[in-house]
Image (cartoon, rainbow over all chains, first blue to last red; front, side, top):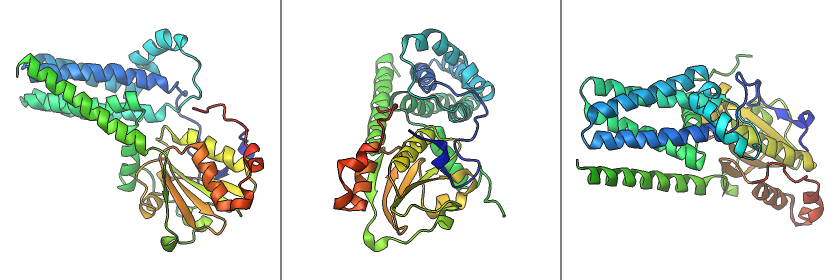
Length: 171
Length: 162
C-alpha cells in the first residue's frame, strides 16, 4: 500500500498540500456541470429563436450560480447541496475524494465566460449571449460527460504565461 | 431562426462537443516513446528535485495545485514505485516552476516522464496513466530477465482500480 514515507516531494508545497476547502466527491461537480450544460443549451435555443431577453436573463442566472460556486466554493453551491442531499445517498461511496480547489477554479472560468456574454448582451449585442453560452456549454459538457477539467488546463497555461503561479524560489 | 433550425443547431453543438470529448478520452494516458537519438540525460536538479532518482527507473510527474487528476496519479505512481526496488517517483509542482513547464513543453497535467536508471527519458505520458501501461514500460526498461510475475506480484491491487 502507498506509504507517505517513500513519497518524494520535489518541490514544496506539493500538489497534495492541505486543501483550503473540504474535499468533495468528484461526482458532485460533474453532476452540477450536467445541470449547467442543459441550462446553457436552453440559453442557446432561446437566443437562436429570437427570445433575446429570456436568453439574457437565464444566462445572467447561470452566471450568478457560477459566482456562487467560485466565491463560496463548490461544496456550498446549490447544485452541490442538491447532489449531497438527493444523489450521493443513492450512489456507492466515491473511490476517492477530490480537492475542492480545481472545480472551484473551474466555476470562476465559467463565471468569466458567461459574464462576457451577459455584458455584451446588455449592450445590445444579442448574438454574444448565445455564443458565450455555446463556449460555456462545451466546457460544462466535457466536464460532466468526459471528466475533462478545462480549468486545470487553463491554470497550467496561465502559469506558463507567468500570469498565475509564482516564480522559482530565489534560494 | 425558426425553432426547428434552432434545435438542429443545438443538436449539432452536442455532437461537436461529443467528438471533442471522444478525442480527449482516446488521448488520455497515451504513451509516447521518446526516440533514443533525442534523449538527454536528466538529473534531479533539472526538475528541481532534492531527492535522488531511482537506480532502475524514475517516474517524473508534473502537476499543479489546480489539477483534478494529479492526486490520483500521485497515489498510483508512488504505489508503483513502492512496489518496485530501484524505482523512484518524483512529483514536480509546476505552480512554482513555470520555467520547467516551458522547458519540458508541458501542455496538460499530469504529464509523466519515464526515465531509465541513467536519467534518459524513455517515454512521456499525457494525462492520467494506466497502471498496466506503466508496469509494462518498467518491465521493458528492466530487461527481459526482470519481466517476471514475481516483480509485478509485489504490487497490491489498487483499491481505486477502474
